Image 1 (tube, helix red, strand yellow):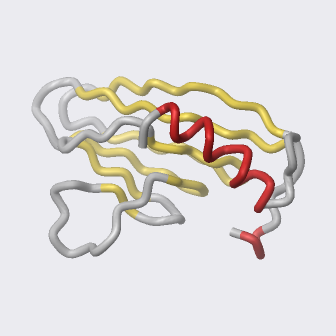
Image 2: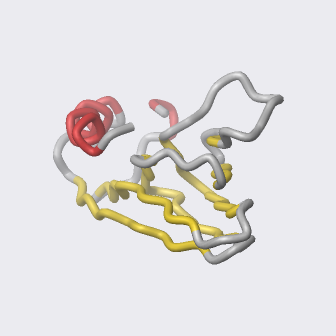
Length: 111
């Protein structure tokens, strides 16, 4: 997903979730060292992956983004809940997200 598409997508998605325009946006750029794993707790937040990376795996309560996986049939760019990021490579990798932080609790029924 490109930044441009994400910026267009966010207002529509937040409206679907019942937030209207009551949310904040942050750009997050994670730098993972060789073979590093990182956990993010994002229970009431959405993380949109905006840069594909074939050396990184992202798993969350919403799904998986892993270009190396052969046993999945769909890659997810939207993540929420417990997010686990893993660098498969022996060198530093970068992962960029847009973090959307609603000002009120997300309605789980609409997700």
